[in-house]
Amino acid sequence: MDEKEWELFLAPYHQAVEELKVKLKGMRSLYDYEIDHSPIEFVTGRVKPVASIKEKARRKSIPLHNIETMQDIAGLRIMCQFVEDIRIVIKMLLARKDMEIVDKRDYIAEQKESGYRSYHLVAEYPLQTPRGEKKVLVEIQIRTLAMNFWATIEHSLNYKYSGNIPEKVKHRLQRASDAASRLDDEMSEIREEIKEAHAVFFRKKEHGPKGDKR
Ligand code: 0O2
Ligand code: 0O2
Image (tube, rainbow, N blue to C red; front, side):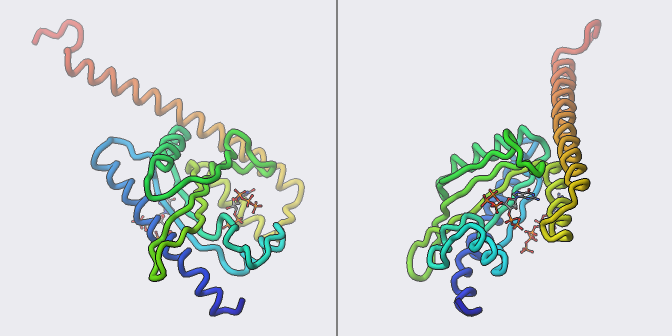
């Protein structure tokens, strides 16, 4: 494919990413209105650059005429504050009528060897085009802020070392991943305590503390 053909091929993917960014950011706003805590902190999206698509196609032996079977040409990323929020977001995505989840990879239950943790969903997203409906595959990565922090650093180190991170650094990254996982656990505990404190506070407000003469 020449540059023009790639541009044409990728146009629906750009459209899908833009539409889904609006929809998922919209979910966050609706949560803000209706419920006190939004499970979505922020959303980003990108279309994979052509050079990365070609490299992955070579690595995974995907012929160019089957390139639309690649699941992450269009990619959305949903960041959450707490691990518990990830389940809520997954449930919310599974219930949506405007996409069909066709695959999932749980790298939280089973983290990658690198230390990578995230939950990946692959959705078939129907796009309305001038030639009618076209379904495109979209990968949605759902992760906590701590998981995102780790993945962002590891990704840039991988880039710096062209995929050959020195063993010593790899080991440190695995330890950092464990630390991020503990941070997620700690934050969940704190969240539970805050919720309990809230409940006690509102109970007291409703019934008055013991000895209250009102
Ligand atoms: P705001 O008010 O700027 O936060 P684009 O590709 O430029 O059309 P977008 O959404 O601007 O679209 O860019 P992208 O890269 O897909 O998403 C970036 C969004 O993620 C921006 O939000 C950033 O502010 C937000 N973001 C990035 N890192 C963080 C972070 O660490 N914490 C938080 N809370 N937000 C982050 P918006 O929607 O543009 O709005
Ligand atoms: P980008 O856009 O630069 O992030 P494979 O490419 O073989 O690893 P597979 O099996 O097709 O992946 O899909 P998978 O593992 O569900 O998703 C791959 C994407 O997950 C990667 O995209 C990363 O975004 C993220 N990811 C997976 N493993 C790691 C890891 O060890 N470290 C980091 N930082 N991210 C990871 P790309 O291709 O890197 O593209």
